[in-house]
Length: 227
Image (cartoon, rainbow, N blue to C red; front, side, top):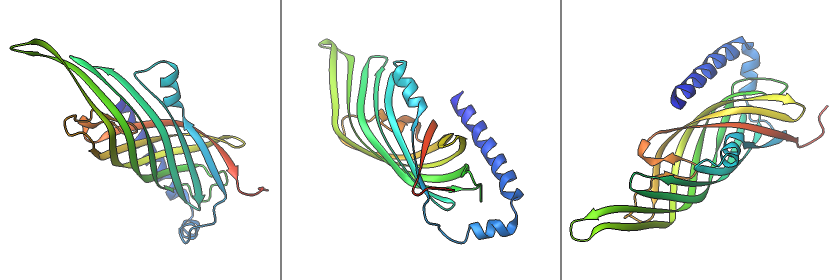
């Protein structure tokens, strides 16, 4: 269901992008692409979905802070967050806890918008440091039920993301929007006896590529007083 929703959102963004970019005057579009401009502001926000999961006691809890700085149509973006998972398995229990960050660049396709609204595509590189534990029970022929525990106290992981999304000015300095993420190529370093089940900031490793979604709210801080 979530994957179908994300595909629908991505399709909507692509359609909106096509209409918006072709509606611009060609000369204006050419001027906007010529150079990277001096930054005018920084936007700082958070993911409302992560907050909702934490409030309603979901197995996956945490928080995330997002920030971006504009350089014309290009935005330098950074995310930092914390995640904790407690999950019951068929014959045991898995938990992890850690921090993560992402850094990358977004390209805005709404050219010369005075409110700096965005329809964007971009790339992120993510890193995570975390610890994880696994307890599970199995039956040994000679000893009967046996409880085994494994841990990965100093795990490190990295991955890439292709992203797309929308940012819209709601009121004065408040922006809202969403980000869809196609996460790929997760790599983990740690205890080879324990195959990582979930990476904070990434998700389930068994899925290979992984869809993520954030619904965000931002506050914009200008670098100088605007007219």
